[in-house]
Length: 360
Ligand SMILES: *Cc1c(COP(=O)(O)O)cnc(C)c1O
Image (cartoon, rainbow, N blue to C red; front, side, top):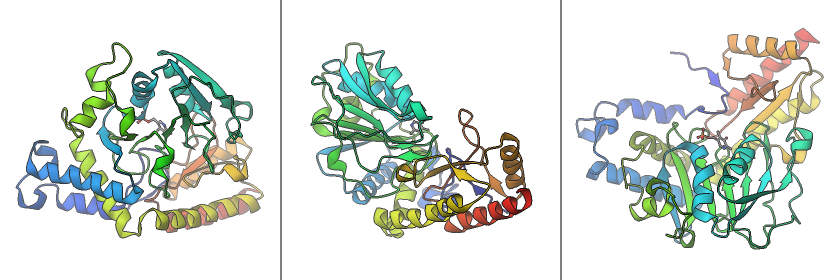
């Protein structure tokens, strides 16, 4: 069996240890004679799985008691609608547009009320994070919305925006659990787990309790109300049970590795290897303003479309998968999430050096 180095932006690499454990438990989970896929979500066995997952996540992120943790479905994209439907009580919300995902969230919110784009980095192909220290925040804004790590463009907020007292809502899909966070600074933190945590099909929403109310936009379906899921501890209907089980295993893996502070240190070390090479290379260069660089998604180009394609092809043949950049930006992108070992980044850089020597 040969595992490749998978640089996919999502669904993405998972810890090998977790996959092996899941494989061992596939046919008979802890002596119950069935797979987690086959068990009732109302069983004692599954109750323990979801409760432990939540407890471990709370410990990892230091989530205060006045925040609820919800395991939902519909992907991050469904949150683009759930957020305004549940939170746009005055019909106004401010959005900071730092890429496609923020833009999609903004466009969805426009369906429900007066969503305003208060800042954008579209002028330079989203290659930087705009200055958010003094934005024209609307007095009636129900919340300020950001996409904290921009998966496609490879930028990340290093300081959170000054929301002037308004609730901050953040999409952390591609930086979830990559470093410590201060949950108290947010009203809502959410993300699809298929980037940095688990298999596609689960979205985790961490939401301050006072924001979960019955006062939602008229016509909001039962399934799209946070209150429905909060009241039922994420078991209103059948949850994505197997996905939650794998997420739980990843939480335990993260705890074993020293938690989020240790993860941050490791991620910084990994990203530095690649960024340092991009800064010195005569062939490859990074596309993002240095101070805004993501630790998770690293886009780069040669400046020549044909050479980019040649690189992606030869890299694939050498066991480096999914390095092609997003279809809207071209070039290359290496996603180096928590589960990407440092050896993978070292090997990639060695391969890039060789390619550079052969193609300059
Ligand atoms: C991938 C991604 C999304 C979309 O996620 P889905 O689960 O496919 O809806 C949204 N936001 C960010 C930051 C992403 O990386």
